[in-house]
Length: 222
Image 1 (cartoon, rainbow, N blue to C red):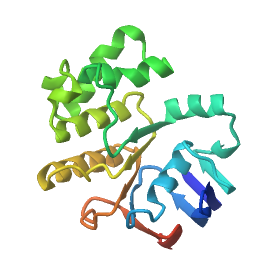
Image 2 (image 1 turned 180 degrees about the vertical axis):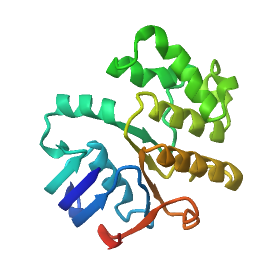
Image 3 (image 1 turned 90 degrees about the horizontal axis):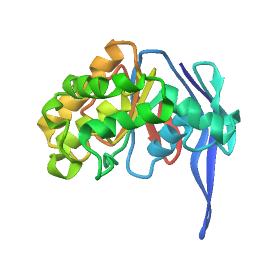
Image 4 (image 1 turned 90 degrees about the vertical axis):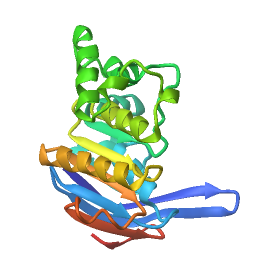
């Protein structure tokens, strides 16, 4: 499903060049649930951004389901991402002026893969799947952190993407809600979705198929 070959990423900073990723080789199978584990600043988010096509490698290649995404133009990359990737952000990033259901419908509106008349029903069905269907018509500010994260996960699933990526998805949640969110990701993988989550928490071993450790931009274990 995912293949990174000799991927490096270097950023220009006022203090000089900073190597966020260093010669990464990584293969992830379809339907695998992988945890990217490392301290803050280790390169976890950069690695996820490479796989999502949000960022491009300085060196090396990134292929997802046979598509070399590093070689796509920005327009083609945006279209590819809309069809193939669901991204769950650490701080939810829900639009505050849209209801929960409208936030979930947003990716459908962009990609136009789901017929217009079916989008509202699909959004509510996804909110039901993650346990917050009663919040469908509420604004994000009225929801708890756990509810907002569930809405963000429903939004990531809007277009039935084969790949779901999550950046510190449980970092702002209590332990009970965090466990429920991880179980949701486990269920996705069981259904055949490839799932990658970046986290600094060590207690994900019970749900993931494989742990990948990263430190200072280098893979320690994969």
